[in-house]
Length: 112
Length: 115
Image (cartoon, rainbow over all chains, first blue to last red):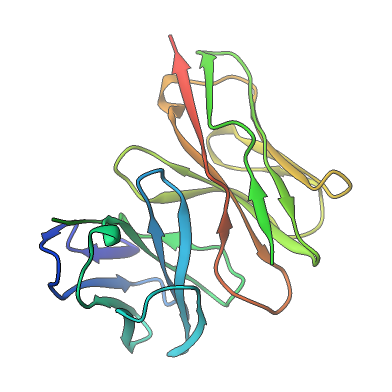
């Protein structure tokens, strides 16, 4: 009964491919997020969704697109993968836009 | 926009000794403050949070933090650390009112407990 789950845990792919990472939360939260953690462990917000509406979009390439089929899911789709996309991607959720955030276990993406 | 500075990238401490991990933030508006812990190859777990009220906040695993508005600091402390506290610790901030969602994180402090 994991609160925030992500699949896959590891993803190895070649440059130019398209891939998706799935996120599901069973906490009944109304806001979900995607963060990127680089090789130096720096965490940066990428997207947040509140009631199926995109709230923020930092300086993220448009090759990244979040898709939310319902309140419990926020998937991350990445087109034309580049070497610099290699990182750990974390999904998180909260109740309300200022609530404490619960994080998933992360997806380690390696682009070769 | 806000920013977070964690002054120490790495803090080595002997087991059962006290520790303080420093965090300073910068913001033109009121903020909420958080400390998260990340164990190796895992996600982030919330240690404690400051939203309002008492400036001394107690969290899980014996950690506490004190919000100091005049010094714009939110340092994390534990009176006696254990080997199991070895992890990466992140300070984070978000605006308390409207504005951009999502947390702004510091660069993290790696706490190393030495036996």
